[in-house]
Length: 130
Ligand code: MN
Image (cartoon, rainbow, N blue to C red; front, side, top):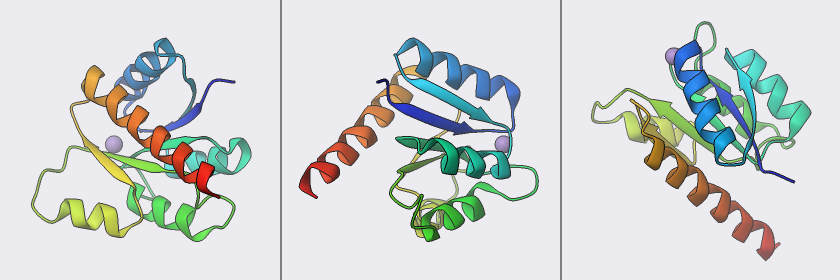
């Protein structure tokens, strides 16, 4: 069974890019264009990882992350924030919301695959301990 990844990103070009990179690497990808759709997918598909854009129309990625991390049904899913923010303090803000990691935009093929593999591996080790 391929690992399933939900990508929440409102920019269609970025969403498609991430989808193509991850699909080619053998992951099963479920795309969502906003936070509400992403949360619904997280609940219905129980993905192995969520990639979460921070700037979204309506509910933003940080609010969506807080909701997912408050819900016992979804709190175990690692979340990696995708953000163009590079201001000092943003990293703390992102991690405080419950994100497990973050990746700066523009998305680079190699760093995306590395970061995804690292989080999935960390999750696998955590599962093995329980
Ligand atoms: Mn966005």
